[in-house]
Image (cartoon, rainbow, N blue to C red; front, side, top):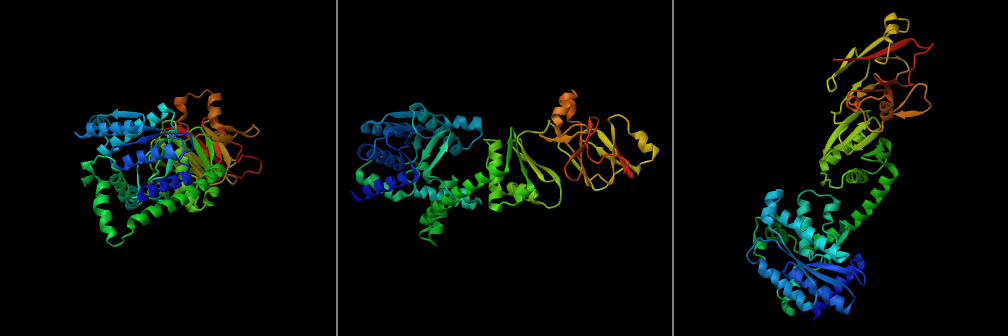
Amino acid sequence: MAIWNELLESVMDAAAEHGLWEPGDAIVVAVSGGPDSVALLHVLHEISVSRMPLTLICAHVNHGFRAESAQEAELVRSMAEELGIPFELAEFDIPSFMKESGLGPQEAAREKRYQFLINTARSWGARSVALAHHADDQAETVLMRLLRGSGLSGLAGMRFKRTEKNVELIRPFLRINKAAIVEVCRRRGYRYAEDPSNGQTKYKRNAVRLEVLPFLARYSPRLGRSLTQLAEIAGAEDDFMEEAAARCFAGNVRQEQGKCTLDRADFAAIPSALQRRMIKLILNYLSADTPEIDFPKVESVRRGILQDMPTAWSLDLGRSLTCMRQYNTIYFLSAPLDHQASYVYRLSSPQPRIELGEIGKAITMTLAERENEAVQRGEGGKLSARFDYKELVFPLTIRSRLPGDTIKVMGLNGSKKVKDIYIDDKIPSTERSRIPLVCDGLGNIVWIPGVRRSVHAPVGNHTDSVLLLSIEDL
């Protein structure tokens, strides 16, 4: 039969192009009982018999939504038995799971279904799970993502192959339209079930399929094909961009446990398309369960990084992820800093008194000639520090601590981590969050009040003006 042979050849071509399987692979076939999955099971069985040795496992999920569900499970079971294919069944009480999880019916069913399919693949040692999504499904997916303002990755739609929890999800039918699949089932006498919920437009996907696509097709009869072509083109270009973004990530991002750091100038030299992808890669690196980051949030991070004026800010990205900029260094953090509020005070010139309400402290500044007795008397203990005013680079910044902070301490060759200083001085962890850091206009930490003074802007014989900094409790 010509239509059957065309279907087989199309599937074999897609498998070869996208590496969907190799001889000897075990594949779990997800069979709902509808025409798409029924045809998929028969096609893969034919391939395993006449084209390439494959081990198939038929898997069906009874979601417990409808009275016909038990009959559909039996239909799939008998089909698998006729073909000599092992059968796996899962039965879920989706309505109860919806109450527990707060998910809608389609989301809850999908979560349980994929969990079962992946677990089945693992138990059988299968490389992949075959899903029956076809070209019409792809067109719906691309249009839905287009309507919500998706980027290139979203317009790529469903992929022929992707990996989830170390199991490949493959879609051999993505180039085949629904009408051809149903026609094959009709001509070859394959029994299948019809799900009446597919005609209910209360579900968004159904509404797109039954109302939006037919309406648009009046103005573009080839709309479905155009959308699937868009998905293939976008998918290939998205893969290329992802590889380029991965190279940029490797060359520009410094990775530590729970932290990624990059230089503003390096980031600014990258094309904007890769900048956005790098931000997403960093967030994915820090949190595997990060939901899709929306465009406005990515843009706010990107534009904040690119600001020319030296600046300091922090942005809560949700899921305990934070982006912070300190002058020309950008930090992405996966945990709150010392469980304290982040704060930054920027001073373009000396201020008599700065109150740090977040930690209950105040810093005073006194500017005077070096011979001033009040200034000389003020240098006592670690609660104050003197600086050569003309050598100190403004603007000054008073901020909270960041992971990886270092300071060049007097009498020490090189820099030392602030964290190590706190440990050496046996400063309790509960007190560390209440110690501010004073930085110069180049981002150097010049003073840790009550702890250490840096090598920067020391008072010497050449000093004319002295800036005295002191800290006290509010």
